[in-house]
Length: 404
Image (cartoon, rainbow, N blue to C red):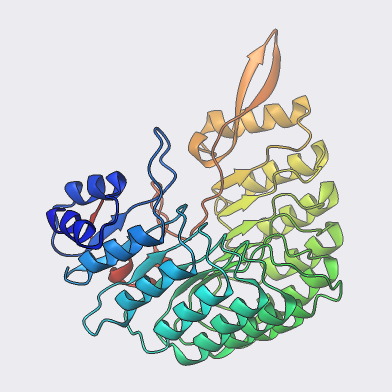
């Protein structure tokens, strides 16, 4: 902390009180994660700008044992990325996790990051979601993936990627040997041909290490889901599939349900905010009751599912004990549905923390209230003891022993 103040004084940069506070709390010397985010829930904090990053990097360059740097929700621009690239290019760098989500990084910043990562062999996780790097920035990242063989987690949601960069990134994933988790949600796609889905199918057929894939807000239709299902039918590594906020209807779900009957690896599926309705829920219910289905967690919130479809899902849970988490808020909650979920909860078949509804009774009638539980966003162990396959694949360096 004192060194940080001295550096600020040397370069005549105003001391950032938030940085000082975090450095004061940091006592560990090995496996340290510095969390200096700009979105504190309880009180306002001074967000970091490029000058703050320059001063911080001056301090961190002499600090050994830094494995994680969480800088999301700050005001870092392309200039700040230049200084962060110095950390990644250090010969003795131990930085394995870099979170820059929701800053002000554009195409040039993405290019600088990619240049620093081409020779980097320590960074395992890079999160850039919310930075408007655009189509050209996505192309730089796709090129980087062809040369970097250590990155295991890449988040690029809400980055304004175009169809060219989406396809280039998916093609890069076909041959990448370490990338386990990818988020490409909400690109800017102006074509309705869903070419990306064809390439994604080819990638899933040959990729044997992808564990988690997020494809939310892609504008996916039933045709795209049909293509995706062709790849999922042959894939044996994917555990988590996120296709929320698309345009998939019951016809697209029918293709997915056929895959689930045979695929022994898919465990978590997010179908929130689609258009599957009751028929789609029935297709899912049939798949869940099949012995070959391994789905453990399912979200169908906001899908216009009426009583018959929701009741089919509750019956599937009764028949198959594999499914332990289900999220249904935002659909039609007729009293038979309310009673069915009350019975699942009261019997212990469905734990309260594994769903987003809670049953209560008024004047002899059963109702459901919303509980703010949701499908977890990462394939990791939760309190119920779900297998930690994803963490074991990422390795210990993504789980620092000391954090701030």
